[in-house]
Length: 317
Length: 317
Image (cartoon, rainbow over all chains, first blue to last red; front, side, top):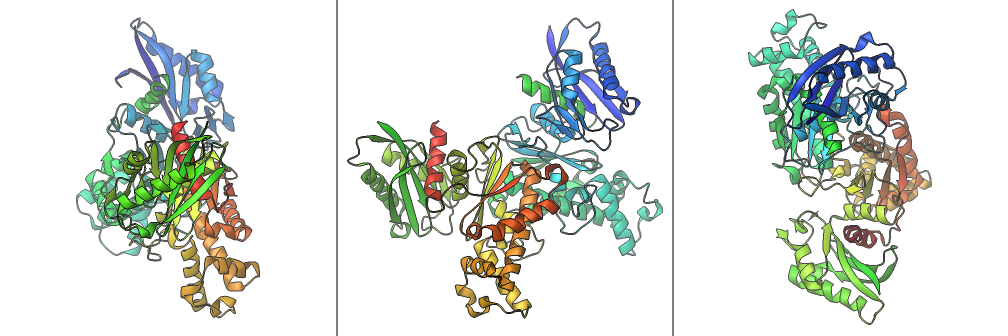
């Protein structure tokens, strides 16, 4: 009988889950609408039923554990804490509840840490001990691995590189402070940069034809590929801010690689190239040419489920 | 027979060494003038002879290992690499040479990492797993401990918080870049701040009577204690920049405490208080009230030798 684990990716709107084997193969998948469950108890029951359904009728496999990636999750305590984008308020003992429901070991962490576990167990960091994964989506999440171990810190919340201040007194961030990296180097940060550039310059741009509320990072990246001058400059500016944050992260942990994951990272070379150039110029001398800037080795579509599965596989091994 | 280790602190001018027991007691001490030895071979012989002399006639103790703190030291390789302030050029295999000389295990790291090991083994971090030591001297060194382990990173040089850029396009740093934390939050950084403030303001200050080349951080701290307005403002400014660097470090590893060590830290509350106030205001919300700003629990006078001893004690245990 083959052992499998369940990987669960809880988002503000949707929850995806899947059975994953030790090689990272996703054997079966399911999903729930997170917003259908105003109470955590109902959600846990539905999730348990969903995972059992994937297992049912398959006598060749047995469930060894569940890994969960969720917003504002605390690894040490197995909780989700004060998540602004979820209906479940306060401190939610998610790990304990799922363990009770499914009677297997459960591990919980935030989505960026899960992405980093996925990278280490199944992706491009298989042979690395020191690396950082930056997830460039609506915000900027990060998972930091040092000497083969995920960094959780004293609180269990370590790895918030998105809230490193990169522009003193800069843009207002969702956290209430100013100048955080995620206000610049994220999908929403890129859109803010374009809005700023459209207002400040008089250069022609197809992006002027899109209402700011509808503008997406994908549109901007596509326009940049076609040499739209505002889009090109916005990508360059984003890469420089990201490069600044990366250089300041490197002095801390001296990683072998930085993996860029998530929506904005899909922009590809138009983002990666100026980031690499920034590092060539501005990296601290001791670390010059010691750090690779790499795309994730995990497929974007299954990344979050595979990462959550990797988290529990790593615990079990 | 009691086991002891030797702690060695190699500086640009002087080298101090001592026999240290498992409780951190320094049983005997010696020193060498580093600059007397233009060749590393001569230095290693003299150091070996010095340590043997401390051991001679003491039949109650035996040497179990040697820990060395040195500038530009690489823990992974046991080397000193391209140290600008030492006569020994290129890559110096110090660990191997001392091991051959004394026939015991040897560990080498930089002085800030040694200070952090000292804090963990003998000082204020005895019961902590996640903390950072910042050594505020001529420069700003740092030793980062995560989950009970020193962070060396992929290269062996991790923990260069002094070269985190805190003021984009700011002051020229010794590393050739601009705006590094150590150009502000160090003894020399404080002196630069006073020079700047003396030229920019017209306020009276006893510090105007000291030639800039003779001005010391100690004088400035003493003047601040006596409410000299320029000195007070300079300490405040230094604390804010240090606070900025600390806040940006906390998002990375979520430590339980930051220890301030070294000459500038001797200023005491006149530095610590505004740093704590900065954190209260500017720390990222997840980490508010989770981090203590503490003075080192190791005596300044013996700190470097005890730290180097702690490094090898930690390896042996």
